[in-house]
Image 1 (cartoon, helix red, strand yellow):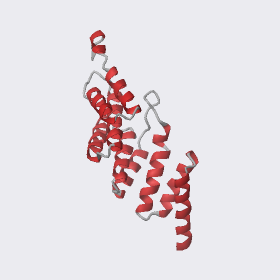
Image 2 (cartoon, one colour; image 1 turned 90 degrees about the horizontal axis):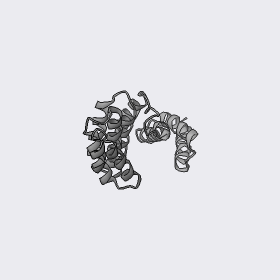
Image 3 (tube, helix red, strand yellow; image 1 turned 135 degrees about the vertical axis):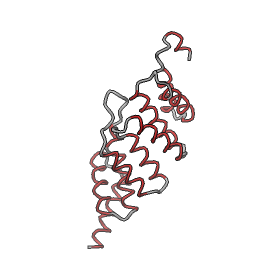
Image 4 (cartoon, helix red, strand yellow; image 1 turned 180 degrees about the vertical axis):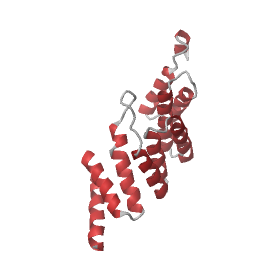
Length: 178
């Protein structure tokens, strides 16, 4: 708050404090700073949207899924054309074992625009993570063919061992059914 004395219109230090706490896994502090920033209209809309996406991530890491879903919903209302909030909602549902809802929200995210690159951008958040999550959720729902399709897309990005083993198992299931 001392930084606001010099420039009362610049609330970005709150955003940066939130990012710093998130980076060092102090999620409760990150949430506090990010919510403070997101609730102040002196910040730009896209930065406030991003702050709410990070609030959702932090709550999800803390396994407070209801709060994560609320934060994702708030972000969606701010910028409904961007994908991150939809992915966050899908991941929160996946982590709760709500597979149908996970698939619904993750697929909606794939139909949205990725985060503009001038904002804090993590490419795996728009490729590997939603594809791997969709692969798992679709597998749990018994849609093996779609699970393989998304799993193989994810493996093209990161040849992750557990996912590769799951894809081999899925292919074995499909071969047994043939």
